[in-house]
Length: 299
Length: 234
Image (cartoon, each protein chain N blue to C red):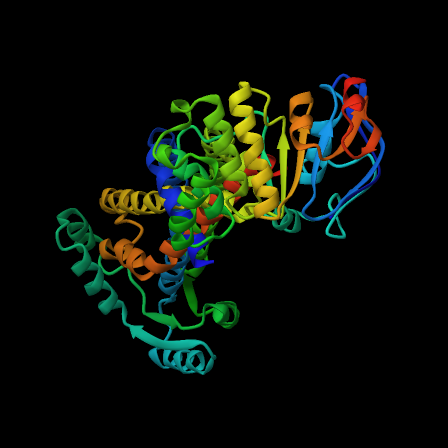
């Protein structure tokens, strides 16, 4: 077996070096398809984090009506803390809310001067931090029971945004999956035809191999080895291009994720991406080689 | 032992016509025998060889080699069977990109011989057929007779139990023919290989004076010892 494998590698290397021209087509096809697959996988990870980030931001702020006493607000705070899934509840008086707003807009004199005219438009508020987003419905139900005291809560608006982003990322993923599958199909066909062409060049040898009793594995292994080599280079190129792509994308993605996060996701998932790349490349190479060689094995 | 039991082979052509290649052919070839399969072109000789090699399947009847039915063999088993058979093809089927040594070693590599065995045995085999001085020549640099010798060397390289030869004297001059036929005789007597030679040449049959199977229009019309007059009737 080891001798057969050694010989297969030797013949595979010969086939590889003899068919560099055709091989470069394979390299391009492998690289492009693997790039798309990596992009699809990466988008899954990014959207997972994105949704999680948004959910984390989806804490609830409750603004109380003028005249609601601090005692009543603190009583509500206590009751909120009793709800499972609530991490903490912070009270901010209307003055503290005003200060916070001024601090956030300190570089905007128009807003600051407008505030001087209207006075303090803010209300006393509670910021509810949720550790389990599934409990939000329960919290909202509780707040509804106190609607006589509450001016407004801001979760409903946030929820719409989260849902919208969730739907967009789902659609992007679906699109990427379809495009990736389409290109996997196209690549299989292209690699199939290039292997077929290589086999056709060596048809004479294949016939002799088959007639002297060489096993199908012995006959096809050199072609498979050749394709695996191209696939290997394809994986390297696709990952290099993907790294450059991330570098290019980062400045445009600040509104989605922190700058370092893109590369963090890539680094954290590097071995998964690498494994996925090799798996797809190996399956693609094996299927194409097997189907391209199959008809010549029926001797 | 090779057994043909009522074998019929009909080729179905693409234009939906069918050609009868063999009709109810039965014979038995014992181990170490040298048998001549004689008949005109189109009489079914090559079909017999192809059926033994499992290249074609019979339309009906049974073909057994060492008590195993060839047409029923799965791919893996057929590969193993083929390792027991050496074939001298009518069109040589030599690998033009490989030299004499490589043409022979290639078959040994495919059938699992070690590098040491190959290094030792290829020159010995080439000596048997008289090609020891052409070891690094490519097929294009060989004469017809040398190509035929190389074909024989390749056919016996993996020490087959059975040697099939399809018109081995087809492209040769009388001198080379004689030399090639001597090699076959040597392989049969010294290596104890079963030899089946398909030919339509009287000279070949006269040289061996061995058992003859005569095919005419796909039917086996004679199976017995050498008789010169029988061949002349063809």
